[in-house]
Structure formats: C-alpha cells, structure tokens
Length: 430
Image: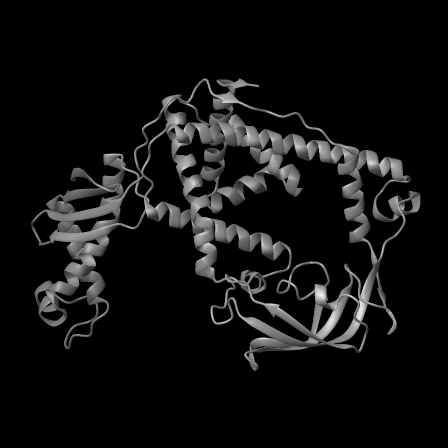
C-alpha cells in the first residue's frame, strides 16, 4: 500500500491511497462470491456462477461496489496508522480507480486533530485560598437539613398564604382577553417565593385564603421562551384550592438523632463542619487546577474544529441526561420544566464545550512535550479505587472497562491529571 498525505486548511487532510493488485483481485473474487450468493440465475446454483455470467446478470458495478466495501475500511485504517494523523470525524471517500488486475486507488478527506502551538507553560503565578468554614456556613447547612426534613401541615380556611407555603391552585390565563395555549390548569402546586412562575405571580397570592379567587396581573419577560407571549401582559384568574405550610423541627439533640447517626446536636455540627471543610478544600484545589489550565490555554494557539466542539456538546448533554436519570427525571422532562428547546440547550453548552476541547488539546500537547503518561501501576490503582467505591472486585471493573472500550479513557484521564499536576508543580503559588 502506498499513502500520500496532504495537509489542508481548517484542520483537514487528504490521503491518496493505492492498494496493490494482489489484494484488489482477492477482494473482487470475494465480492463476486458474495454477489453470487444473493442472485438467482437460471441454470446455476447460488455461489456456482462463473464470473463472466455473473457480471452480465448482476452487473460489474455491483461487484466492484462490494469489492470497494471490502477494501476501503482496512486500508484507510492502515493509512491512518502509517501517516500518523488523528481523525476526529467521519471520512469522505472518493474512489479514483477500481479495476481487476490494476492497483486500487482512492482519496480520503477527513478532519484531523489540530496542531497546538504551545506558549510558556511553566512559571505561572497562581493564587490559592485556604479553606475556611464559618459558624454561619454550619448554620446554613443545619437550616438546609431542617427544611429537608420539615413536615407539611394542611392549613385551615382562615389561614392566609405566607412566603414559603405551598399553594395548590387552579388558574386560567388570558392575553388580550383571549385564553392562550398552556395558560390554564385545574390543579397546580406552587411554592410561594420559589420564583418558579412568571415574575410577580407568587407575590400576588400572599394573604389569600383557601377557596378565595384572585385576579393576578403579570407581564411575561421579554426573553420568554414562547415568542408570541414575550413581553405581553396577562391576566390569570386564580382559585386557591389548598395550602400547606412547612413545620420545622427544633434544632436540638432529638433532631440530630432523627436526621443522622449522631446522638447530640454538637456532634452533628462537628460532622457538618468537617464535611464542609473537606468540600471547600476540594473546591479550592479544583480552582487552582483550573487556573493553571486556563493560563496554559491562554498562552497557546489552537484552531478547534467545529466537529470536536459538537461532539463535546453531545457528551455534555449525555452526562446531563445520566445525572437527571439518577434523580428520576428524563431529559425531555428537564427541557419542559426549564422551558428550553434542545437546540437552545446545545447553544448554551457550546462556549463551555469549546473551552473543554481546547484545554484537552493543550494538555495533550504539554504531556507529549514533557513525556508525561500513565503507568500500568497508576491504572491499576485507579481501578482499585473504583472497585472500592462501587463495592466490586477490581477484575470486574477492569473487564467492564475493557469491554466498553473505556480503559483507554481511564489511562488518558490519568495522563491529563498528571499533566495538570506538572503545571502546578512548576508554578509559584501565593
């Protein structure tokens, strides 16, 4: 096989590939056999048709198309390996010549991983804060626990809605005196003060009682997701069907026993303080790493192909979907609740995706320049950590990673982590 590589603009490469005659003839014979198995020719059993007759009945083009399918992929992969390019998208194939007893030549145009021009990536000035957990931080976490374990009490007809209550309401909405799509509900639970509804809607229900009817006047935001309603005034006729109020348990030793494994409130506070300190330390360490990577990216030059950004956006959407499923939600439900279309969500993620791709490319370039890579011992250690976290045997985790093709990703992640550690080790931290 002969390969000629031509680098083009916009991170594209063209490979001119020529395959030797012997391999071509074998592929055509194999293709003829495959076609012969598919066609019925009078007087011949399937697979026993002479090539000349087969070409007359099935057509020579069909056989050559089959041969091309046999030849293109393995030779393209060999050409990629030989040339050292790193494709990041599906290739565009152009058959130049395919004939029996002649070399097979074809062209491949493909987007490749861009080259990175590194700037100075040593000697950065980085800032690192020390973890500090205040009494106020601990009290906020206690308050969050108090809210989480609060009991909901049904209010009576004489009780008035307050901020923080949950109102069960029915409503009918009108714009310009006409009902609009999605503007009515026979029953809707609304957290007063959550800001989950149209601005100003919840405030106008404060002081209302069960069975009371109120007219609520609001204006849709200018950037409202439904363009026909954006910026328009609306009237909602609302009826209060029921109200629930949170009843917070007192912060005492009994509360600590109910919500944790601790016997006293002071023990619970100490544990909260410890966990907050650990979380803050991890957050500040991540900030330091982000500083180092950002500075390395800022000093480097790289033209990121759109296809790599698109792929990163899709990965981010997939990760969001996985997190939502763990919370019992689907991606479609999330989009509905957030009042956003999929295309809008993708555009929202795009700037973040471009930074992520650029960061990976720069870190890869630094790891190659500094000969940084993961070792087998480091991979094994990471697998053991995963096994402990998932309560599985290391062999099971490794087998799962290998079967899913993610073992290489694990090794890549370790290399990236070591490269970031290298940047920090070669920086001055204030």
